[in-house]
Image (cartoon, rainbow, N blue to C red; front, side):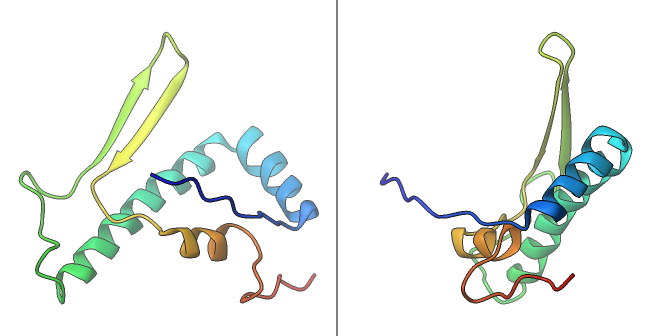
Length: 104
């Protein structure tokens, strides 16, 4: 597997606002967003399965799983949907030449 490097750009003021107001003070909102992302991945898989026979509902159905690890102090959220490819991640998580940054 080859390693691909991509430049990540973000508007610092918006990133700091997200970190300060979502991650540290509103843990419930941050957790809700992560679970919502997992749900979106499942919705994407369901939608793609309408036209792509290779994508079928997994045995046992579509699932979002939460794995708490008290010892490590972590919570892992997993799903069996379709995630973003590298282009989608670059477009949605930062700014790229194909997407203008939001105006203030």
